[in-house]
Length: 79
Image (cartoon, rainbow, N blue to C red):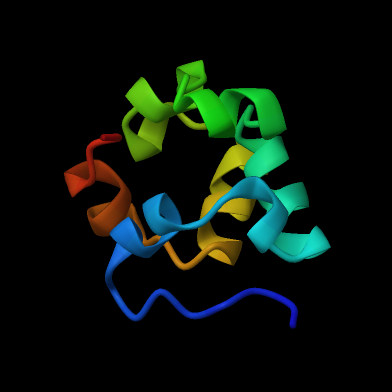
């Protein structure tokens, strides 16, 4: 498995442990500042508080790879 489809529902990620993700998914989340310790503790990195326009190119690429669009990113809050 490469990257699962969240089908417009970003909350699927909250149901997964870090170890449940593929290596590609982990790499994409890592580009957004996450690692296993942060994920397991739900300790969101700075990227979680940014609007899409504030994400750098690498972060936008990673977010797109995970299934986020600008609209979806801006309307999703980390829980």
